[in-house]
Length: 303
Image (cartoon, rainbow, N blue to C red):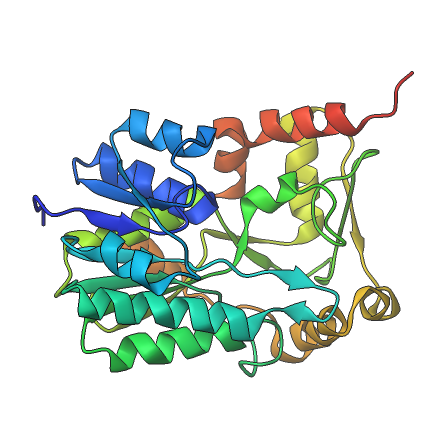
């Protein structure tokens, strides 16, 4: 479904909001991007790509309502911060619920929310704030779709994270068992699922989808990255003690992965909805390997 009314994209200068805005613009849908600073390079790039800019902030509810006025739908991804004690779930929920209330007050018809994949109880590993937002969306009376993506393939590019990211020397440390398939998703696929929901608000109303693109053991993933980059990459399974030392939430997550078996997105069903799901080798071939090489070269010690 196409409309002259725009989709308001929150988090438009971030990862998921950015790929969703790009996909909608490519499909010919008008996009309004919520930005805090319209003069920032990332905001200017959105405007040059065809998006209208709306200045606003999740901590300013009046600005959210102004941004939502005249929009037919909202892609919701409120900012959340991570610290030693875990995610700021309360602030994240407050911000997300403020956008839901602003959308309803502004007469928006649909919300697509991107949260996080399910693994155990909602308070076990950073899901709590997102679940509160989901509850508010379901109760809002608006048409809605809830997307719950697993780990991003783009996380191989992380720098400075206590776990994840390919490090100088080729090590990839993470919490996941080395020999069990690890579900992951390409960011572009999240944008593709969001676009499907925006194109068919009635058909996608009420859906809650765990999203993944591929499932491959961390050891096999490291081998695929090695083959694609020509650099030796190896996976290191972080110990429970190491995870606990980083922070209690990571320790809880380490144990939860082993208790639950990790994420359980239904890949065959997702591929029926979107046959172009991106495998890890495809992501590497489409620029992922080149970006990993650039990160490795940036972090390499000077000779």
